[in-house]
Every structure is written in structure tokens, then in C-alpha cells.
Length: 85
Image (cartoon, rainbow, N blue to C red; front, side, top):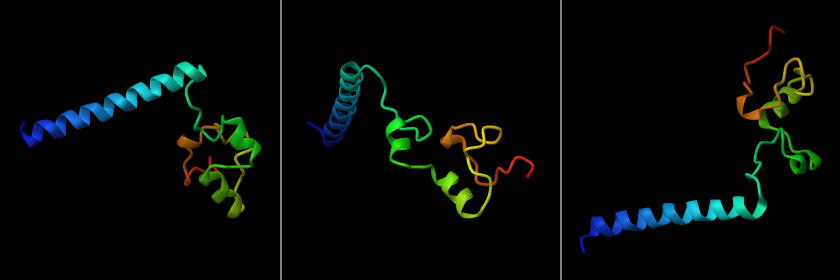
């Protein structure tokens, strides 16, 4: 069998294994893995904050606790975002 065919088959097998693993995780837990800091209760309980929120607090800027400024979506946070302040 050609080497390129073996590589392609291994790649397809790896992707299939990943899809099966994620599907089993979803079926067993009943929900998607919550990796967003703003919505994960365990991360909040441990005091983990997104990097943008920590840098704002370190520089004395408005903390992300203010609902008028923060959307509580850390993936959409912008370091340069100061909302007119």
C-alpha cells in the first residue's frame, strides 16, 4: 500500500476517533463541555477570571463586574474596549 494512503487513513481514523469521543462525552454528560469562563460555575467558584478582566483590574480600569460594559462573554472581550471612558 502506498505511504500517502496510509497517512490519509491514519488521519481519517484520528478524526473519527475524536468525533466518537466527543459524541460519547455529550451522550454521557447530556450537555456540551462548558469551557467559557463567564458561564462555567466551577471556574467562577475557584475565582478564575478571563485574562482581559484581570488586566483591566491590574491597570485600574473598569472591572468586568459592571453589566453596562461587560457582556460576560470573555471570548468577545477586547483589551482596547473602554466603552467611551
